[in-house]
Length: 252
Ligand SMILES: Nc1ncnc2c1ncn2[C@@H]1O[C@H](COP(=O)(O)OP(=O)(O)OP(=O)(O)O)[C@@H](O)[C@H]1O
Ligand SMILES: [Mg+2]
Image 1 (cartoon, rainbow, N blue to C red):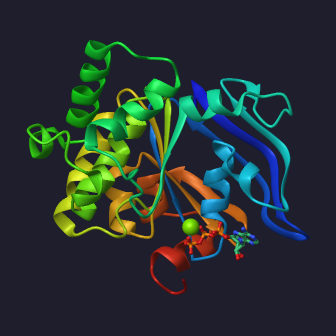
Image 2: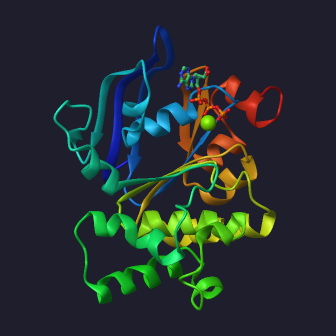
Image 3: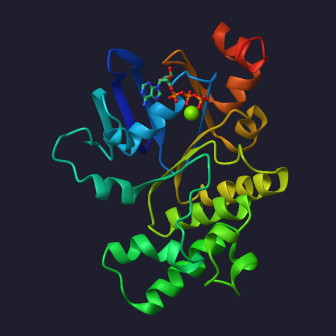
């Protein structure tokens, strides 16, 4: 692989004495979609959250090893965490819009970063809502409360909010698991559109989803990355027995 944007090297993640991620070595190519799969509790979210330093908020969580973003180790003590999170955005399983208007949800972080110009903010709102396939649903109601949107619309708003920051990398932790099939396919279409300009890492329990959208897939088992390869290989001809057992539904 050329053009690596994120890479973990011998990454161990502990909760107290419990080692949730064991020596993860994995590299993500710029402008690609990677799916992280594996049974519940195998460490997918733990790994994903480490990439934009969300674990810093978790008590007793300790990381050893390196996470390189554009070649720089972001586990250094003096790293600017807000800068990292601006460049590496994250969307969670449950839509979590702020209790404010649709417009304000998208402009909130931009304003925190000092952007005040109304034209710039208006443009950011329209562009990010377009990218998240929500513009047509809400363009006449931007002052409406985000909480009044449906679950699928709220999730697309959360994605728009992330996109408005113009990140390089978007981390998605089971973004469609709480959504109906139509909202799910809108988000999958959107991921397909975004991959030309963004690096996307998505945790999913839905194997069809991984097969549809991901260039590469990593299979996690008990805190280890068992296999990482092109998605078509993982699903048609995996090298490891454990991967095959999982994708054919023999466990997990
Ligand atoms: N804050 C925490 N404190 C202690 N242990 C934790 C914490 N978060 C997760 N763990 C443990 O770390 C392991 C990995 O959890 P994680 O949430 O990363 O799994 P996952 O693969 O995302 O699972 P799921 O598919 O159910 O979301 C589990 O054994 C879990 O109990
Ligand atoms: Mg999880």
